[in-house]
Every structure is written in C-alpha cells, then in structure tokens.
Amino acid sequence: MEYEVIKRLGILEGNPEGFHIEVNIISWDGNPPKLDIRKWNADRMNRGLSLSADGLKKLREILKDVTL
Image (cartoon, rainbow, N blue to C red; front, side, top):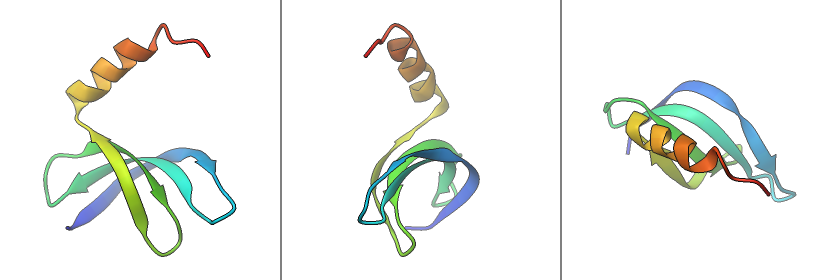
C-alpha cells in the first residue's frame, strides 16, 4: 500500500513504547486525500482511521455536543 503524507496536523498523545497518535492528511494509493488518525513510531505505522471530507463533517457534527 502506497501513501503520501500531504500535511502533518499534530500529535494527539504518545506512550512509553514509542508509539504516538498522529492526525494527518494522507493520500492512499493515489486517491484523494483523507483525514487520517493512527499510531506511528519511528519505524512503522499501525492501524488507524481515515475519513473523507464528508466523514469529517459528520464527525464534527457528532462531537460538537460531547463533553467529558
């Protein structure tokens, strides 16, 4: 699977094993870019979640009233 990190948006959190959760804009296999949230370390990436623009809009709508 080929990917290109278009823009690094930030790191959400990390852990002692060296993995951290990044939020990026990534194009997978030459397809349109998506918002991508996944664990990374210096050597490799781990499973994650990729959202299209429509998916991101729906997530924003769902999260707008969330309180923790």
